[in-house]
Image: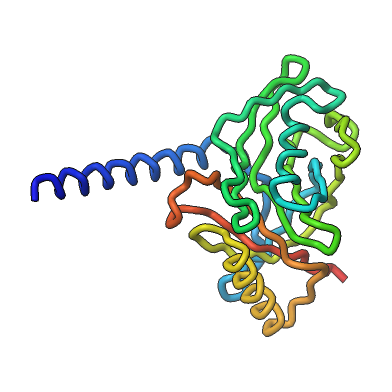
Length: 222
């Protein structure tokens, strides 16, 4: 009985530590800014400013992640050697969208922080994944990738319809949440452009009940 209580207490302590670490990482991770302009049931309509991202399309999430990790690890013309400040891995790349958005490093003596969220979506050409760079960078000032399969993308100002959910973002769960997002928007008569995509904010060590996952789709401005 005593041993069971000891084990239970140990597990509770580990869960509390993991929860505290999740909240700490979220508090120190920059996010792409946005303004909530409206809501439809449990869907937010957010206005995002123009931004710059580093992007690739690869056969799998793990391949896409490795390419982008290469960019933030120094495979760029700016010689930016960016060291990850939190664990980042793709534990089960074909069944999970875990990426871990936090990265900090130096370029010419300046600190670079890759901002959350990380975007990922499956397309006919493969998995498109993007890391966003801080707001002080634009398309002209961001370090250029040296790998042919990685490119800088100027993301225009846009409005996204976003639905938030928790637990591990498996392919099945992401697809189910995307269906709920599009169904809500269809009922409300909100026109969209393109397919829904996933936005991840937490690394794989985050507790499932504390995870911030989102599915989003561009709202048609026309």
